[in-house]
Length: 308
Image (cartoon, rainbow, N blue to C red):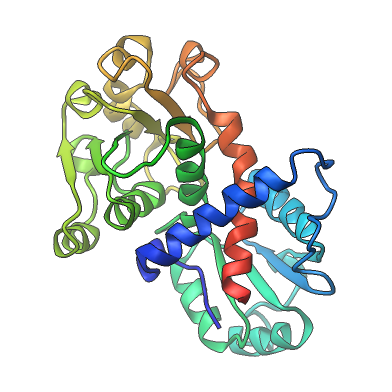
């Protein structure tokens, strides 16, 4: 049994297999309708339980469509509608019950500890649909998108602007180590990556640069990325955080410091006029809608990896 919780848990070989299989499956279904199953239906007769502690559009839709394309079915669970560690049932007991009902679980949680705790008691795989510490499915989709447009991500320069200490930046640092690309993070010192992830990066020889200068962060970049300045359940003073990050807005002027054919990515939802301007996210360098689509294809391959 294999779980997909953090990118750092997997070998570079397994991660490459997931990306390459996603490319292959996407290519093979070019002439199929969006919810038509793949010809081989590898998930036929199987089901996934999806638990959402946090609101979701892309994760909910993309996993549901991914399972349909694999030939299976999904059951969506809201923590308020099930026991899930509340009342007279522990997380352990909920996990034991789900093991009897479904073949795999996807959890989108406000606490990474819930993923680890839940995973301990499941006898089936669990996938991290998002936690406060990592967002591995999104980053795998981003790598798939990058390679679809620009070729191998190895030795490329990826730039991250804004909050350097969130789930996306953590997963990007891990991915930089596993896929061999250079990662530049432009952020105020106050929002620099945690000591824990920096120690992991040093131990794994990640090509990582952290700078307070946004222009330096995007210089000669192949891809510029950002995220909402204030994430869901972010317990901070929103006005102060936005003020501290205003110089890290991705706009046309900043994009000029990247390579001429650099692409722009955003995991969505977007704070238009805050972390990015309309003319960038809606402009010719933006690939955000392809990113959203590729969540389906990356996650199909992640599900297959977990079960095979």
